[in-house]
Length: 151
Image 1 (tube, rainbow, N blue to C red):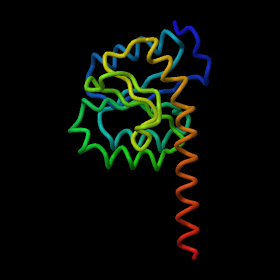
Image 2: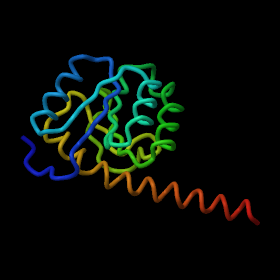
Image 3: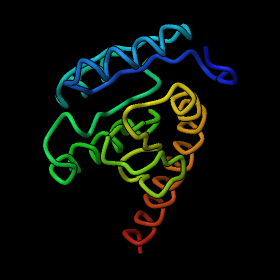
């Protein structure tokens, strides 16, 4: 059980083709009365997010698809279309968990796979905080662009 997570009921969607990762996250989340829906491609992810505004966490397994560089356009599109959905990136290539905002163009938090329960709990707490910063960044950027266009 999570010891400190007391945020919104987690309704998560996971983009992953790895059954072991899906099973591990599903087990951890269900033990904590959270939901997880797993899908396998970006088109299905976008459709699910459009159809269900109640999904409040997006998890993306970067290792299930093409190189990270090939995924950047899809990640950036999702970040702009569904800007208010905290996004957690997952990869075995991450050297450590990152709970800061230096990858904010792609996601709110980065977790190293295999994911530990405590890391997942911290990610569920921190991703919404970082997501607010991401939304503020987008607002400031669009306001600045609108001012320049008006001049």
